[in-house]
Image (cartoon, rainbow, N blue to C red; front, side, top):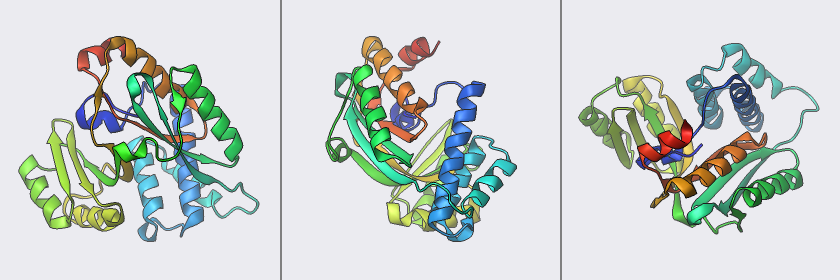
Length: 248
């Protein structure tokens, strides 16, 4: 769930095979259940739940799955999950931040550490990587919603700090505690966003070649395959030519 060029470094997901999709739906459902359990089961009054539902819709998760995940939050005797963050380094000194939801901290820490060590990386201490990233709110809209100038003006009026537009769409950045307000303001003008969530945005990216890139993508894929891992961020840059070759 990291990217391969400029701002898309934030998100990366390889392929949409059935197995991957089932795992993805499971992770999305877990986040919805936890968000609903930690706050109100109403997305209008629970920003985290609203963001989780947006993420699920963006991946075409069926409404019945979303409703079941919300209902599960009210079930008695369910598992208690903990938000965990792990920081480490991949090949070429790439910084990696891993966010997880787990009902067993020791199991998840052991699995994440093993994934790093088996894929050319090493797990670091808390704070060893996050200082190279900014924790911010991110709101995404499709390119067809508005042109770049219109979106920039709306971003400024809504209180966002930055707006980047390209052929893939618009990405607006804001302070973490302003995410809900900015997203709500933009929704009144443009409708529901493609996503609205808290992310770790790299301050600077490190260019990786084909050799290092291959090892790095294996690390990111392995982390993504871990059931407890929800999001992965990495501060790398990879040319489209290298990315396409490695993804073939």
